[in-house]
Length: 204
Picture (cartoon, one colour):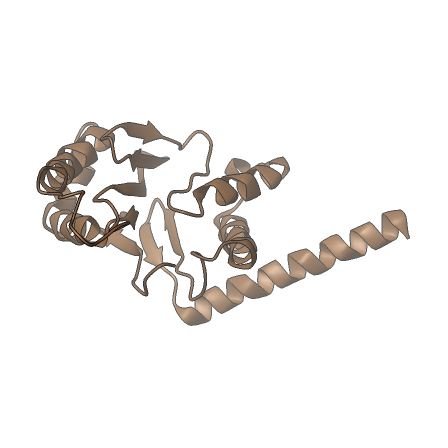
């Protein structure tokens, strides 16, 4: 991560959200979501409800942004990505709000990523696609996500420990403790060990 801050947050008790980009924007988004989580999650269209909350924040920061500051270069931009996920009416949902205010839906894919490591995370997710993530258990899903994060830790300077995981099902969103993440990590190690044994059995 480019700065040491929590990037995975509760969205009420039934969902979670994460952000990447300008820290000032994400601070305002967090405060807004904390105040309006019930309205967002009860809205007929969660994507549009998220968009309605995020757009004014983006517009405010874009309108007050000074791109050319004398004596300073590369001061960053006020752009930010926001992604939220949850469970409603017996189905999961994954929604992204881009810096342009566009809405993206990814529940049917079962995987999405935002931020500087997004391209590599998408590639890592694609490499796991033959495991049919949307058809497997939450336990496996947590292991797959942690494995992707650990792969990114080796390849991206902006991604690193400590990692945060949130498990979401019909009973709500549960943010995993350090002890629970370590249990997921043991599943990942067993998975990797089984893969090595299978390769050795086939090719050695």
